[in-house]
Length: 459
Image (cartoon, rainbow, N blue to C red; front, side, top):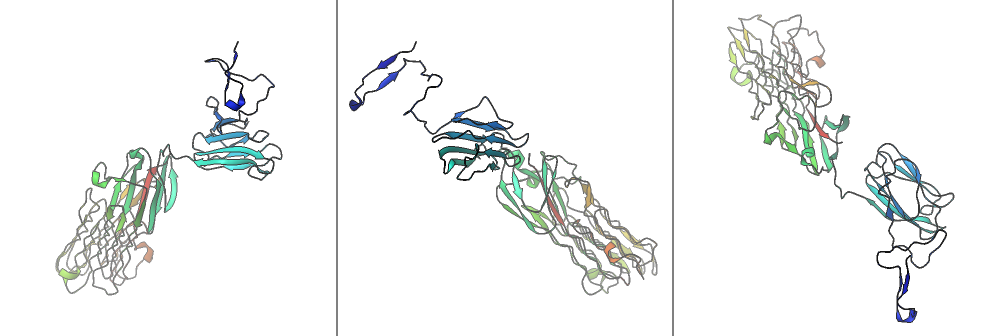
């Protein structure tokens, strides 16, 4: 049996009363009370009983609440002055499934007789019961981040999810703001698609506009089917983000100049971090007085197609300009006239160069060729083609106007009344498709605007 050892009983001398011997616990009998000992402001944490459903707390205890399986309630005990209770978000899921804290009967929490909800990720709270006026007072409230973050979080653009990945889509200028980075550097590497605006095309049997430059790199932690132009594992193409703002530029499609027989306008660049996709080359003009100045297509992400002039040969615009690896695009087609043909060539695409064309003596000749094909990626969670070249303008009047390349390339126009609406000749918005070339009497057309898509693992 434990003994009581009295070292001294003179209160004035500051002597102490020792209960129990070395290694002996002192326990109050059932029903006994104590005064003067008090609490130190801490709780006994119930590490052996993780809470996953509604429960009633006890004075002097702290609880780990696991709401990953759904929200539930912690009922506070009947409070008396000095009582203390704590709780912490065990799985950092309060932001998804909150924990309701309910007072006993008509008692109050912070002066209000009502339940409260804890909904901050990683939150931990300690209450002390003060009196019947204020009830349980919150003496410590923190949102724990000392454990770090398993995954990064970000804002900006239109946000969707696919499996364990978040996808930010920018169809116009914006900002990707990374608010938290992950502990594991691998989860901070993002996948991206950056497509520039497609090149424009003029009237008067002009060539097709070149597709906007195409840049893509797939992070190893974000599963999806990338295009053949995936930049992994090349270090210059890999982007590991930090907790900062990344301005996003989405290039506009190039337009047609107000005058015929002039080169069309190239598309504008799109950018994300250090990645730049170059605008598609404008199409070469047809029917102008200067084959050297007016006929060749312009260089760009993909090159513009040559315009129809005769006689002679006009080159297509070079693609992948400036050069990057993998290539961001291919050349536009060249056009050669023998005697006086006027047929033009299509614009290059991200997946292939446009075919060149040879025209026999005018009038007539074969109808213009299609634009170069684009490439497909599932970075947005569904397979989608981007960056197709525009179809060539045609001197003849074929039943079917020259097609644009898969990936938003506009159809070429034909000589005389055009059977298709203008929208079919413009490059498709947010694909980077090149514009289709105009026929003899058709107007010019506009390349499709670009797009930027960011994908990363968030859970």
